[in-house]
Image (tube, rainbow, N blue to C red; front, side):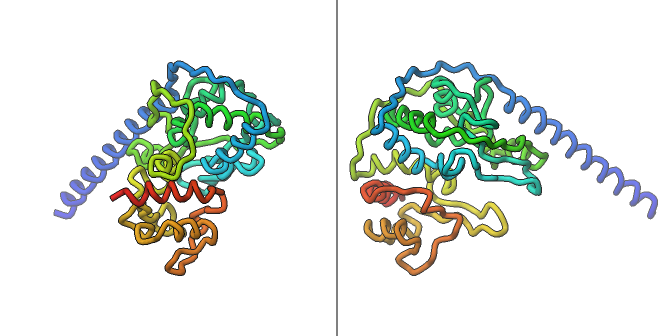
Length: 290
C-alpha cells in the first residue's frame, strides 16, 4: 500500500514538474520573441529647435514627465529598478548623454525612442515608459528632444540588463511592464500644441505620467516590494477626492497631506516640479474621476 501511494505521489509530482517546464518553455519562447521583435514604424518628421526658450521648456517637460527622475539630474546616473539581488533581473535606466557608455542618437533615433519605445535596431526598449509620453504634442516633444540633446556628455557605463525567470513570467502575465512598446499606438497622430489651461483636459494631458505607478485607472494597487506601502487611489474615490484644490497643491509643496500624514519616499514629489497651475489642472482631472 505504501509503495503504491509513493508511486502515485511520484507520478503527480513528476506531472506537475513537467507541466511547469512546459509552461516556462512557452513563457520563454513568447517573451524572447517579444523582446526581439523588430517593429516597422513610420517615423514622424520633427524640426528640433535649439533656442534657449525651447531648452527651458524641454527641461521642465523632462522633469515633470519623469525623464530626470529615472535617468538622473545629469541624465546619466540612472535609477536601478531591479538590482543584482532581484528575482526579476537587472534593470537600470541608461546613460542617455553622448558620453562614453551613453548613446549616440540622431533626431530620428530620439523620435523612435520617445514616440515608439524602440531602440536604433527597432526592437523594444526595456522598461522605457514611452507609452506615458508618446502622446506629447509636437511642440512639447520637439522641446524635450532639444533639451536632452544639449546635455553635457557624461562618461558612465550602465551594467548590461538581464531578465530572469520570474521577470519573464510576470512579463508574460502582463504584471511587469518590461516592453512598453507593446502598449503604444504606433500609427497615432499628434496635435501640434497643447496650451496650458487650468482645466481637466489639460490635467489629463499631464496626469498620464501618474499612471506608471497609480495604474491607468488612477486607483492605485498593491505594494511592489516588502518595504513599499500600497499604492494609493488618487482619483475622486481616494483621499485626494476629499481635498480642496489648494490642499492638493500644498501636498506637493510640503510633502504632507491635509490629514497630517508625511508622504512616503516612494512618492517622489520633489522629482515633479509642477507649477501651481499645472497642479490645479491635474486636481480637476483627478477630481472628476469616479
